[in-house]
View 1 (cartoon, rainbow, N blue to C red):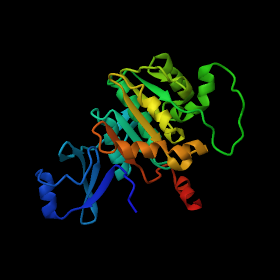
View 2 (cartoon, helix red, strand yellow):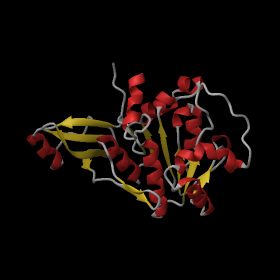
View 3 (cartoon, rainbow, N blue to C red):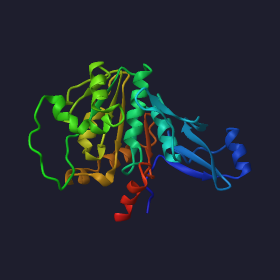
Amino acid sequence: MVERYTGYQTLSLDDKELNKLYQGEFDSSPFLKNEYVIVENEGKIIDYFCKKEDRLERINFPALGNNFTGIMKPRNPQQYCAMDLLKNMDVPLKLITGNFGSGKSMMCIVGALDMVQNGLFDKVIFVRNNVQVKDTDQWGALPGDLYDKSLPYLMPFCDHCGGVEGVERLIAEDKLEVIPLAFLRGRSIRNSIIYSMESENLTKEHIQLIMGRVDEGSQLWMDGDIKQRDRAAFEKSQGLELMVERLKGHPLFGYVHLIKSERSEVARLCDLLD
């Protein structure tokens, strides 16, 4: 059985191999571009590297932060890699997957606001397919204007930027724009982070549509959990898996799969029900 690509590998190296690694003499050919390497020595994680060009480069400790959340630091090795990916300006197409509570959405939101606040991008373009959780009844037409109808899907964003008032302030300051997936066709988006949340509920064609909106100076950040798909069409298309399989190793694409829930002890119990 072929192991699924996760965007990183863990290497256990002895002292001699470590010397080669730090001297730039370690063979990097087994790794794909933008793939992370978690380095262990004597059973302990001691450092992190990433494949750049034809070599492994050491990555510095990553942290994200903004005026809403303060500083966010990685809590596990996979978050370490994911945060570095989000900060990497040379990789404009980023995907983070993981189960509930693994921190994928929080990192994307905190990181995107960090970069907008520091002037690296003009705004965040929030994109989410308006799909309700499977096996729940439809609520019918929501009242209000486009913002009012989008608000229920924006609440995960609100959780990390001071609630609804924070979102409204960002929109008023033109730092956040909400675009339903249905209205995205034809747009050409520059100097922005396009953030696609819950991307497991996208088909291959949806992903192609969103990727096609990226214009000069923009990046596309996506997150998702393939275990939380809410329609058979998304399970059949498997857009995220196809994206990883076709784009892994491309210099413009980076991917990290998170494996540990950091939300709470209760949230970690969810996997026991599988």
